[in-house]
Image 1: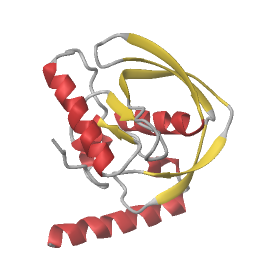
Image 2 (image 1 turned 90 degrees about the vertical axis):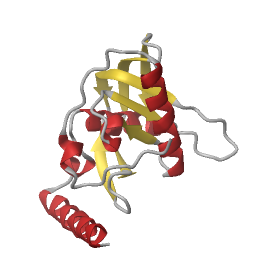
Image 3 (image 1 turned 135 degrees about the horizontal axis):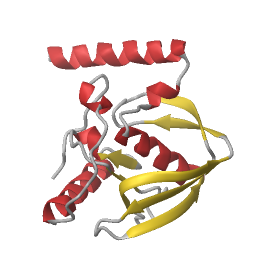
Length: 171
């Protein structure tokens, strides 16, 4: 089932997600719904808070070409345990439609998380995967890409998104 994606400045995007404790059919359905929603959007990552679900869960799939097989990864109760280097990536976000900004982040990360069945794993990532993991993990903490911008860029993006929200509400 496709879930509606929350758009900034929706206040629910600022609420930190709660730890996932139940690994049941409801959780598996949520993951399936998130994947369907992300692929339709289209995006390379989606965090549960972006669809109004306050859980520490995100998914990513950075397979870059249509002919590449899907590489859907599920991260539950993730924790970034190491980060190194520095890179700048032009990021977008499904909660900020039409907005792309250069964001500075660590180049490599190590993340510890649980998979969809509650099995722990650790992953070292770099490049696009590292960027997406950090971006989606921010969502679980109530942090948004706008928080990584200069005050001036933040104001400009905030103003544009607030105008968009007002226009959407008027329809």
